[in-house]
Length: 107
Image (cartoon, rainbow, N blue to C red; front, side, top):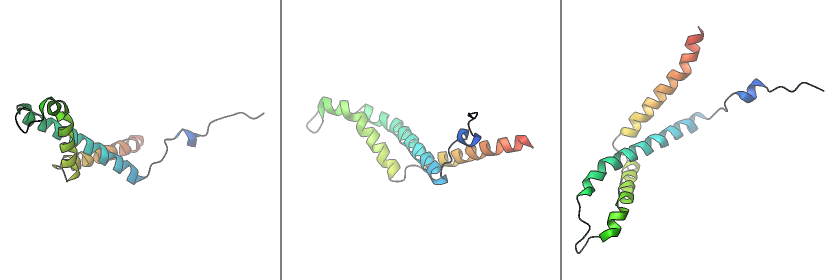
C-alpha cells in the first residue's frame, strides 16, 4: 500500500482567465453604481402623490422602488455616471497590490 498524499497543485486556487476576473469586477462595479444611483433617485420620488387622474394609486406606491431600481440599472447600462469605471480601476489597483505584496515581502 502506498501512502496517500495530496499534491500541492491541488491545493492551489484554480487559475482564472484574466478576462473572467475583470468581467466579474465590472459586473460588481456596475451593480454598485446602480445601487448608488437608486439611493440617489429615491428622494426624488418620495414626495410625489400617487392619486389623481393619471396616478397609479396604491400600486404605484408599492412598486415604486422596483421602478427606481430599473431606472438606475438602465442608467448604468447607458453609460452611467462613471462611478463603475472608477471602482473597477481601484479594484484592479488593489488586486495588483495584493499580488505584489507577498513577492516583495519574500525579498
